[in-house]
Length: 254
Ligand SMILES: [Zn+2]
Ligand SMILES: [Zn+2]
Image 1 (cartoon, rainbow, N blue to C red):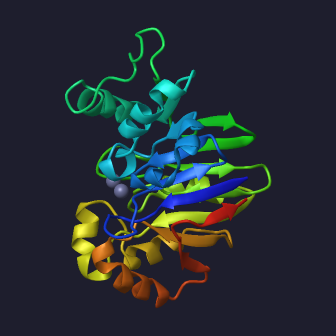
Image 2 (image 1 turned 180 degrees about the vertical axis):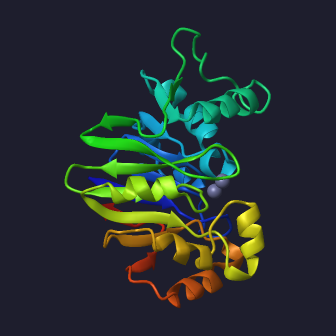
């Protein structure tokens, strides 16, 4: 299986795109501005979207994805997320004010947007890959995901601060290959990171002490203002794990 990194920045500007991954050809994990990297044919092939949480940098392209493919698809696009996340989308995004309610377009009976609540620990199997919701701790209800091809698993933390339940779940994975984990801020913004419930290199180091596997650690969600500094601070960490930045445009085989 392939996981294509469409966007993995904590912001925009230049080539930076916010969080979105393409799993195989038909599944998105988060729908940030990275979705704009897909061409029309690739957009029309999306059947499922798994969201980590409702923040704009993770859902920004979902409304325009649905609008773009509406007349070119016969089947709905299923959006999997926590019930709290789906509630935010219904109340504040697809509310006919910020954007039309695509759950009743083109018709009430056959809307192109289908909501599928998921809970922590629950798995959905698609195209031979098992997608399991993992616990996370953020300013709003949030989850991460385990993507298990059967051969190997890639874990994506979503946006989170330290979350013991996340590591408990990760350490129980027998075929763990890589952990994609956020580090949004540099150490001089540690207070802001804590307030925004994101990691900085110092808190990342504490979190990685919980990782019992020898999995590769891939850093995502760097804020552009301090990305160089944040990466230098991560490089200087005394960690037993192999850590490197996740690269926009790369494809992870697992
Ligand atoms: Zn967030
Ligand atoms: Zn985010």
